Image (cartoon, rainbow, N blue to C red; front, side, top):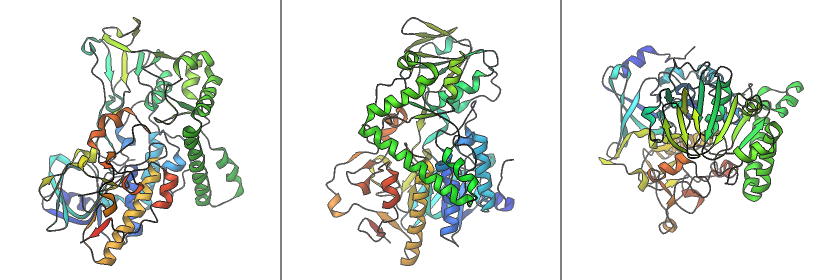
Length: 502
């Protein structure tokens, strides 16, 4: 059952006209927004807050994406929250994740703070008032206005309703159905039909085995291979701890830490001995489909973790290839034709349904029109402070998680930091906080927000020019290193030179 706002009268008041004020306003009720609201409530008791969510319910990705088999591509022991044990499989379906999030909302009385169906259109900062003013489009298109002392952006990093699809020649000539996973039609019937999935990442690897049960055949068409980990969809360490009668929170914390340690070890090995790690990953796939198939379709040209490594729970896609219900084609698309797709090699891949699992479009700050003292915010001209605050943007934090670790790990580091900052402002009697470059930072190099030599996924490269700049010092960048940040964030000196209070 969908959880809805518990205080109906309060929700109605939000769209009935007038401006409501809150100490803190959180944008987004996905995994970041719900977790941040829980920490805010616990760590800053007495502060008023509201969560504005554009969709009709909580969940973010796990609500908006409805393509076949939609599941996590991160381990749920770390993608789940530290305060609520995850008791399901490491890789979980969207409905399982939303059930878990719904329990978090109910157990922590967060529902009455969430306004669903509120799409934020603009956010304006006034230095004269030390306030943000947000204008949202509420249910029925009614305008709702809010002011807040602090703005916490938890809206995610891509456009939920607009996936990225390249413009291929002849798409209009194709006689079947073309659908992007982000806009998957609820009534699309692919039973007994030939399905082609264009893409090589986690979405394609999720859809292929999910559709293979009922489709006539599924073909995954990729331009170039990606790395996969085929692993059992259970945690052996968790299974060892369960019979010991330990408190479930303790078990959750131990397993969570071990998952973090294991992933950190893999990540470091990818940089230190990439060829060895690549050989290990490929050997795991060869156990299912043999070395020739792996060499042809599953051997990337880049080192592991330069893009995300997708997890195949129980090697499900490999099993479907074994059964000849899924096949791989590695080639370039020449154009679409009425019966399917013509490849550069001259082969025609016939299809009734084509799924374009070709990525998504980066959304910078939720595509909201931001302004500071009447001037439009040029976000790409700011410098990031630890990937969460920005020069020239007062009283705002942005959640941008990890590429190689679970998003939630960084969400909770940022939550602790923001709550500590808010309490520190109260102690100082401050109503405004800015991050500013220190004297020794003014001449440091200005670099892209993400180092493309470190991580170069397509959606990052397409949107890199829209993102803030980083410096060459850890304080002025998103390091993507949880193992370092887990100690660095709690050690931040809130009275350091980079913080200016007013």
